[in-house]
Amino acid sequence: MKKLKKNKLLLLFLVFTSMISNTVVGQDSIVAKEIVKLQYFNRNNSLQYLILESILKKGKQIEPQKSKAFKIFLDKDQPENLVAKVMTDDNGKAKAIIPPQLKSIWDSAEQHNFLVVAEASGKEGETPSEFTIRKAKISIDTSSADGTKNISVTVMKYKNGEWLAAKDVEMKIGVQRLGGILPAGESDSYTTDSTGIATSEFKKDSLPGNEYGDLMLVARVEDNDELGNLIVEKPVPWGVVTKTDNGFFNQRALWSTRFRTPLWLLFMAYTIVIGVWGTIIYLVVQLVKIKKIANSTA
Image (cartoon, rainbow, N blue to C red; front, side):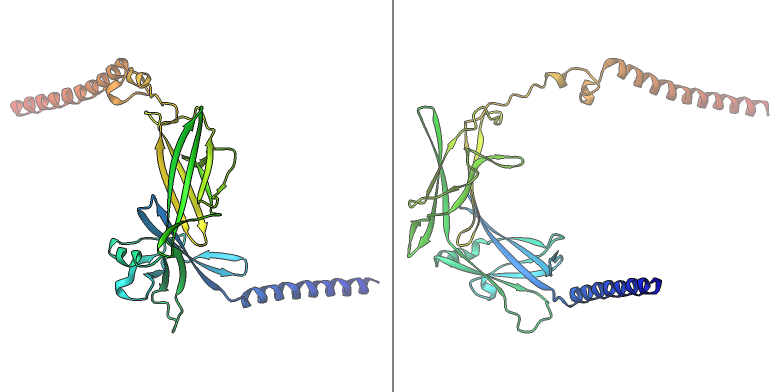
């Protein structure tokens, strides 16, 4: 019986070891795949920029590719169509602003392709990554009626030589805060109708604003497959005026600035400084006197 138990334990150990080795071999045999992502951002219909992200995916593990150089082109892989040369940071990301010299190319078509080419990759005949974006614009408007405040956001896309309403576009509408966008109404997201308009009622009354009572309204379209990321901002006087009382810091106290130091603390500090330097000067004078007496005696 003891021998049979030992054989079973040995068999279980061998099976467990074989499973672990097969798992390790299987993980080592997985080929790592490099993935390049490109996001297009349009802020207030004026500033346009791109965020490139390079990651290395091996099974379920994702690792950012840092210090990797890329070239981004607009429509064609040609020097005159170069958007920027970028280098990824520690998070595998890089930012590129579309330069003004490409404005004529940008205005010539209703949609564009961004080509991303890796520099010095060591691969022959590597196919560049391609991302398509349609020209779009976004605007925000406000209205007040019978004590109700509304926010209307319009999204338009350029197609067939004219600006058309972009329907079924999901977005966030709210107030810009330090932690992100605070929803203006009860819903976290809104969708444009057939006219390209999404409307939200402003229900964040008594929200602290700046010193003038202004709040920054924000509408944001995130990762739309056709339009990319659209952001528009507008200040409105719908907040509560924030008053800063500096009287607490203008009095002479330990928490005030150096020009408002308490008098007793200044007296103690200056007394210590005068006492220390007075003692040093006294000792120096006495040493000089001793030296004179010694010279006269000699």
